Image 1 (tube, one colour):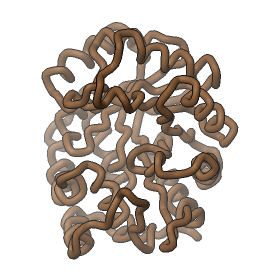
Image 2 (spheres, helix red, strand yellow):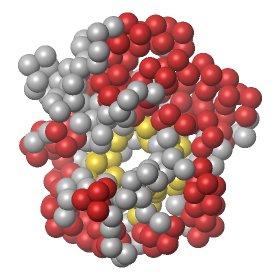
Image 3 (spheres, one colour):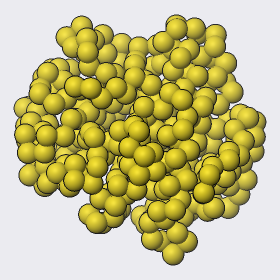
Length: 311
């Protein structure tokens, strides 16, 4: 399988106009900028940061196509596959293929978040999606504090299935991380391992091939540097980048809800000159008054300035 995500894969937000429609002009600006950063290997759309489940099926397909066009098909577009049951998720994957996606990030069936999963059920999800769509797939490991976090045997079995070429790991439990990542490496040396620990990047940087993170929207240049430092096992350099970004990390991800980070990402993109405003769709809500100023100050401290993007 030829898709190489060994680097940075930002998960872009979906921009909206102030009246709530998808803003395709802003997608062009955002996608073309991210795609121009050396070290960016793909764009992962329709995830949590992209408010993917808040879009209609027609909008989802158009967003995939718009991001593909924004990068002139130079890098892959990965689509979030989020539908609940296997059959509808497979249909979603086929629509993603038709819209121009090169791979799929498979979310767990969301009923599992509350009720847990039956042994063997996640494996059928990946098998059915791939067999029906032919879309190369990324294994998505959810946080340890959810019931949709896969045990090691489940991860190993999914990683060994046809069509699965990478894993996005967000377990947020370092005891499991230090046990399970080496086991995946040993069993499948070619499996691409990507961290999605936006708020805990530093301790995971030395064990991975890259990052698949919403954070990539707002600081792609610094995160490419961080990946390089991690691969070189240069802790001092990685720690310096981490400390430089810490004001931004706090203002975007150290919030009451991780979902608020999506709104904060949009304010960050306003600061960087990509978006004109931070409009989101309900049930997301605007941040408290003054949050935009705090985020702008954090970006200034981190040296993340406005960027110039061709219209």
